[in-house]
Image (cartoon, rainbow, N blue to C red; front, side):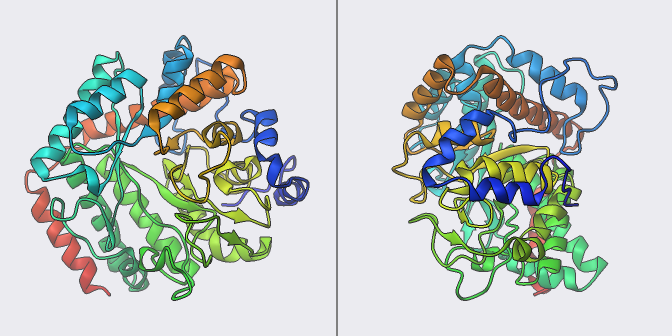
Length: 427
């Protein structure tokens, strides 16, 4: 699936990376202002075939509709639509008020925000109502890290699935095992929708090196790129079938670094050839499965843009778009992590580099103000802001359409429990 375009193939990306130092990330991204940000440029508002697929979820018509919707938004609305906020505590009305006041695309719900299933449903309903009250006719982003295993923020509320490490051995057993992985993702997605969620921050596409990997470990489907690719492909297909937005992560691969990006910036020192054979195949498989969103990790990818966190690096976004062929929504890993904390205006740098969504900044209100001002002053061009917001809106229109077509079964909890046991038995 890797597409080395004549104008900007791997060699050109590596040249860009070699010419930029740690201090060049923001400048380079600003100069591009969307050059590698989206393969879906705002060139035409009326596609020849509105029903034509984009390859990552929405139709060309939905993308055109999204562009028209955001065209007259002010800077504050554009800024809000590209931020997935964080909040503290359990108060649904407090969370909803922040989403409404800042025009946020939505929220990431963590274990610190949940009490029980009733409270989670009330929280998600309040945020959804806030988005509707703000005049938006598409769903809020209501996302959660629900990978299975150790990363399950709805523990005790949603069905507990085994870690994604079970998926590699499952797909190794052939078509029946692949179907188990796909069904696990589909029932996870349906159960999350039943709780009011529209996004899931999964699957993990990182190929782990095993014990030396302190962050991913059993969150990875395998140490084998081929098995990891098959597992990711089935998971994306399952989530798509459930009508929930999946987020393949953490591009270009967090499984071989020996530092934790929650604490510091890990160095990914693999050569371009090593990345191509080991880290990239699962992401290419996700693209083939029509992944709607890819999360960019906080990594110092020496082969592409040394010294710059990948989430803030225009060459990394360019590489994902041009070489891997991904055309959907790009989202940063949490901007509240140690790898990017302390950098000047990381949200602005990420947006200029090519991010369509900014995940969980440490201070949502402050970040919204900073991004709004950047759009107003031209530090982030109006074109780049509209482009990012339209990508997000188009994906939410897709989620709304598919969710309307795919009913959540009344026995979804029982189905999820059965799928969990099947996956566990494959290990």
